[in-house]
Length: 538
Image (cartoon, rainbow, N blue to C red; front, top):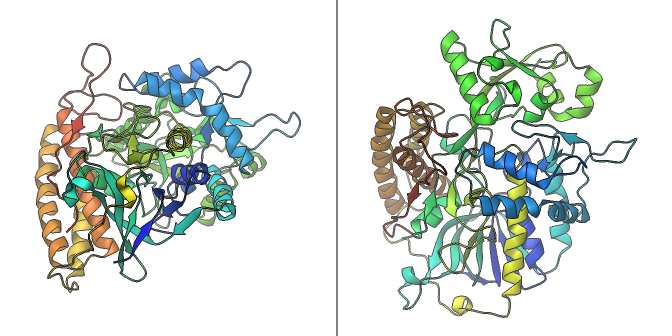
């Protein structure tokens, strides 16, 4: 088995992974591994922008309070403050890397978007493809930077820890196993410092705004390595995903509502003021539940987003990608309301981690959507996701660079060769497809926007049975990318269900008919799971 050595292993090539790799390249050899192409990530799909205070009458404290209010008592205030206070320096560095945010031609000031939950315009954007523009600039800089060795089509299998190998002393992460998706070869990367930046897990649900790669790989790997996982029940459903048979996971950005779009039912009635005085600019959990309720009351398959009061010129300039995509499907958003439905969008929980990426396992860091820093609490404020990924990746790299003189035994440990045992090539791939569909359908039906104890119990039983089948399949047959992703989404699904069962209240993104109100008192309690049974590799 081939073993590759590096000073730093970065798993994932979204905003967090690319930022960490760039920042660490001056301190040692960086191995950057990603399961798809270098520019293929959840971050690349982000439309709205990055929240950052940029107006004279706006303040960091206002941004902090908006974030805490949206998080409904579950945020970690120290993390919120650290990330928001680091936002302006992080944006300056992004611009130094070549990112160009839209500015007003007359004044030269940033053109700022308004999104739900924000008390001021503070969303920097590059048209309506902010994520794509940011990733494009960072990928170009990655290719120009020495000391970064890139491995694409490298699917992470599991972390390698000294405890799993059987070495004495404190358990420590010393790298990971990978599957080369092109050749089927298993190889290892050995490093004293591993950074998980693998993104979210939207594909745990049938309907999601996420790309196919969002299968919760880092969270599942960390849980199997014994790390604490927190607040997984807090799954954010974006209120406005395009509803069309030929549209796959296409998001209608919250910025469209920020520019005055109204949500209307099938009969043309604007309904959001019936649910919240902030109407379309209420936080996402409120808007998603309102849409879900309207669809159930009327028996409709979607609602509509109406911005026809805006001119075609304004829409094509402000939302060129959304406008062209809708038009290609026969929807002229200057004349036609856009059919939309809620879809799984962002995971506020994840691997317990500090703002600087530190986790409970020495040698392992987590940042981006894989991590749960406490920034988002029970509901993420719009456009805070890219901000968290950016600031935390910078903080992680800064800490590791400052510790660069300290070297552990990660590069001297012998990682055991991958053993396939008696596994054979699969002749029952249909089992993988069936289980994949069953996990996602189960989660959509029973662990969606509105939950009950009975639905969660049904989901728990079904997911546990599916996981047993997957475990046996994993042992009997040679691994493939599909099997690895199925294994991971099933783990993440179980973690979401178990955390949801722990929370006996409705708070933020977790709404249950059995406990329709939040518990009285101050800061809410976090849900917590740490019980991996050593279910790691072979």
